[in-house]
Length: 296
Image 1 (tube, rainbow, N blue to C red):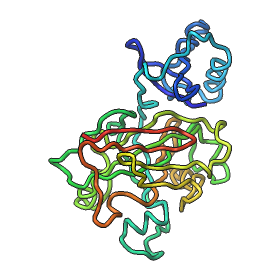
Image 2 (image 1 turned 60 degrees about the vertical axis):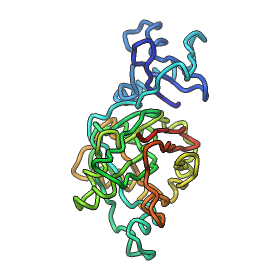
Image 3 (image 1 turned 30 degrees about the vertical axis):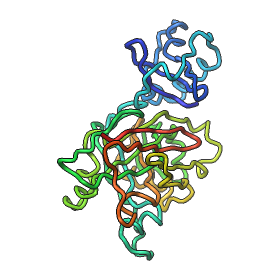
Image 4 (image 1 turned 120 degrees about the horizontal axis):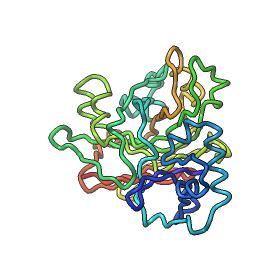
């Protein structure tokens, strides 16, 4: 299933994407069932585990056609607002690690996952504008990433058990002020300004993915392709990432892990091709959808 959070008639609701034009209003379906349980966002489903998934699946199988709405008639929100910082992986594709370090040899490839975070205040939805902060940066860059959504709490998770803790997948644009990233000699500030974490447009559940390694990711700037790769190209795969993160630190249901970006970021071009006001950035995946934001 593709789960979305949307606003319609001054109410925030949970939906299931039926196709590119139609969404099932799951909140309305659950209200009509009069069972006392009603979901309004994806996080509520995640926290209820298999019970939550089963309730939404039931709603998606037995519904009145009147509960189907046109996507163009509602505002798509971020699937949910995370309760903790978004976990992010740096330099997790070989070619990007080399373009980031500016050297074409294996010394650019990290030996251990590089981990940083972005605060919940940086999260915005698809179709929201992102302020470019010209007073702070002249090197605003894009990073298309697949996000892993944790579904079950756990600590000290072994790689072979990691998939038992995954709820699904989404998309993130890890927007970055490269000059701030360099100025502060660490990555948090340059990646954490308000609006620097577009997230969505939906969460795709694990049972809807035939092959995780085949999940693709791409980035378009004003319709021009800049990035394209897939999860099979990760240096540290998802089970490794989850295992490392969970060592001595309990992962929680709803935690978001951005798995890293492939080559083709603006700083990798000669000369660099940074974002400017008016640019439209699309982070997409054929299995998930498209996350579209305009820089202002």
